[in-house]
Amino acid sequence: MTAQTPDNKFCTANFIVDANGIGNGATHTTIASAIASASAGDTIFVRPGVYSEDITIKAAVALKSYTQYLQNTQIDGKITANAAGNYFIDGFYLTNSSDTILAASSSAYVYVNNCYMTVTTSPAFSSTGTAGIQVRNTIGDIANVKLFDCAGTGGMSFFNCNFSGTPSTASTVSAGSVSFVGTATPTPVVTSGTGNLNVLQASRMVCANVTAITLGDNGSVNSFIQNSNIGAGTATAIVIGAGKTMLATDIDVQSSNAAAISGAGTIVVGGINYRDTAVNTVTTQLIRSAQFGQITFDGGTNFLGHYSEGSYTPTIIGSTSAGLGTYSVQTGTYQRIGNFARVQGFIVWSAHTGTGNMSASNLPFTAKNTSNLFFPGSVWASNLTYGAGAQLTGYMSPNTNNFALQALTSGSASSNVAVDTTGSFMFSVWYEIQ
Image (cartoon, rainbow, N blue to C red; front, side, top):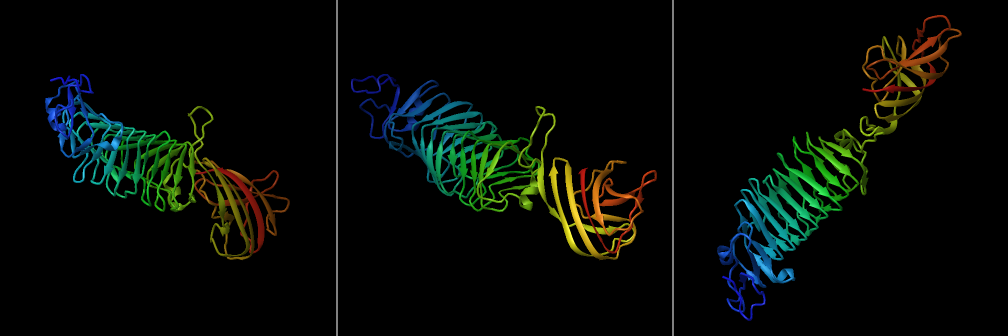
């Protein structure tokens, strides 16, 4: 029926719910009874009040609070969407002290707009089957419970939402994609199976000393973090499982943990700022196959994906017997750029037990294992014995991390240099690595 009485301030609204009773234009006292009477295309307006009821909403029926004050019209109960179609919920205070606030199943797709939520029971949102949920312009407080369990391939999206609280219980994504767009949330998220997480457009996932993002092993879909802030206090901020790739552009990572990002997966970075941590830890280094991003000079055909520098301790060895030396100087430095390394060393020794041909050993990278590919270097030496009139040089052989000394004489073949009991030399070599 149509409520068109002189005191009906909703004019031609077909369904008006008022917890205080029928009259003054109201047609129903419960939301469930109004839904039972409504058909596709109808809008149900709900006046301020507390509606403690579980409701099953209908496809293409809009459920809308009449007041602009979000906490004045409260639904305290479970809302269920369990059939194919689109559903609309707008302007309510949503709570449930004992169950999920909104459950979508089958092929339902639910739009939640302009709501306020108090989340005290896990999860606030759940989806299964091919169902999906979209939440816009919604704020809320989250206790130590899940914000969502997404098992529906329709996924979940949160646009311009603002959630507060300090939950340590992770929300889960086992199917479909969950996206935070311009959204602030303290909710940690764990993906598994074919589940995926995207954090975009100035979103903030800042959690209280718990990992913010855990991407499960062997997922088939990449996750994308763009122009957003990921924080975890003292915990690792992001864990990337084996077989997963996270694409990260223009993001801030806040974590005082030694491993701000860890795991066995891959991060491809187009701009990242570590605010609180030293990132060059062993754990962090091992998980990145594309460390700190990649640079391309030809539009993406070839990439420069690595830069590092550091020091090492060079030694002298013999080819017949490596031996042991007494050293006064063992200085070594390196720079690695992509798949090439520039390595320098300075060694001074006063005694050595090695025999055979002399090499500097313990270089930080192994030369590329390509047959007949040698890498020559330059040498300065003092107090070494080699052929009169010869020039000292050296080279890296394939699949070794040794720099072998050679003596060059004009018009003659090069010759090896035997291990000297005392001596010193400096060397530098640029070579392709494994």
